[in-house]
Length: 242
Ligand code: DC
Image 1: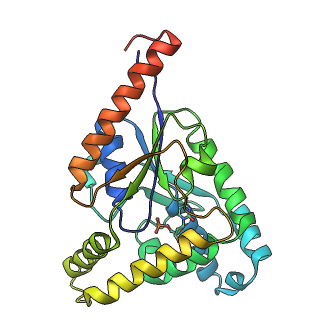
Image 2 (image 1 turned 180 degrees about the vertical axis):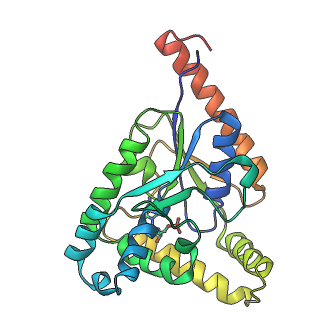
Image 3 (image 1 turned 30 degrees about the vertical axis):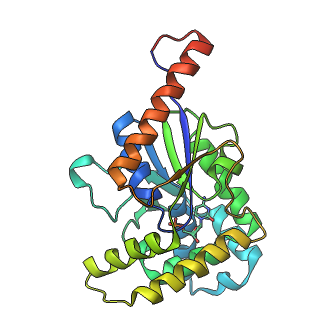
């Protein structure tokens, strides 16, 4: 039997983390977990309760503690590029409602609160405890699973990431200016990398994968090769035969 790995994939907005992580999990037969969905679920909870908690760190922390968030796999037959995990908040399916722009904005506020992060990180660690998981986010290789078997830091130039986002909007019928999307990419990069708590940084032992010139399938295949190599090495170390 091969050892099942814990794989951490981090990177900036538009680096293709979600699609790539989901493909890698599919190819390896692992569970895919989207940690950002948890921050979005807390944000949605705050908004549904009038949004007042968004201006109070202690209320956001209490809300995070009281929210029951479950991430479930999406059946392969129902794969939609915009849906990552099926997300339940206190038993209610919020998979679609956490994907609005309003929730994304609120989630980026929620994600700056240290107390919220502590609670969600503990849940993420529980969810991935058994191995055989691909978890993606901003702090997976640095904070959530600092001992992950394989850490990937996905990168692409801001221009390439902006173009991907611009195309996604276009496919949804939203005609935006490419320069505007590029500006937003720069703003999000700055917020993600400069925030005080758990900023987006590459773990020293993460493999840097620049996928500016690669599509999702090629990026996923490369990560699967790295994972197979790591599985084989760990199998040898532990005496487990692949
Ligand atoms: O990846 P996403 O857009 O769904 O993430 C939503 C927000 O949560 C975004 O502002 C980044 C933040 N986030 C985080 O701080 N740490 C994570 N591990 C995942 C997401």
